Amino acid sequence: MSIRHLVLAELNSNNMDRSATSREARRSWIATVVLALGTILFGAQCGNAQDNRAKKLLEEMANYLTSQNAISVTFDSDIEVVTSELEKIQFTSTGELRLVRPDKLRAHRRSGHADVDFAFDGTTFTVYDRKSNAFARLSAPGSFDQLVDRLRTDFSI
Image (cartoon, rainbow, N blue to C red; front, side):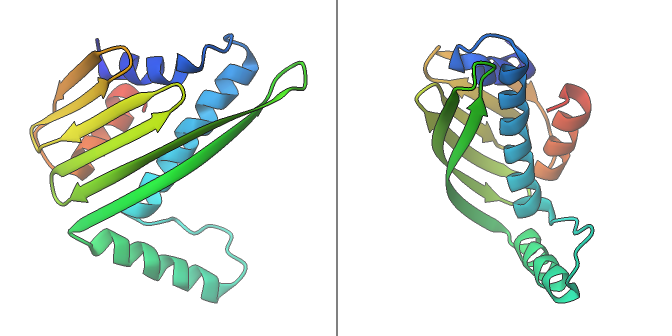
């Protein structure tokens, strides 16, 4: 099973139909993850900041986080979806992420629908779905930054 298929399977694990609402939930989840990782790992691009002081503080925070050799994060997230029947459904997840630059990552995400581990050791990226007992491995020698670039370009993740 490829990493893209495993991640998409995890995104689809909420058993919703493949309507626009379901696609919107996947997009929202992906956007949340990309925004969080982008801010933490690569610094935020501050566009249209009305307050130069706020922009400067955000840039300083992003630069500080980007310069750290080790980062540990725990998170709780909620995604709300409104169905075509105007029902509001909330998906909640929790997890943790540990990054040691340049090439070590361990992350775990749990929810009512998913229990997924991510690991990177500088040579191999592994995704393990505990609920379905499935995993995927990708040979990815290099740094964590190179891994993220590869996942974006080769797998559109």
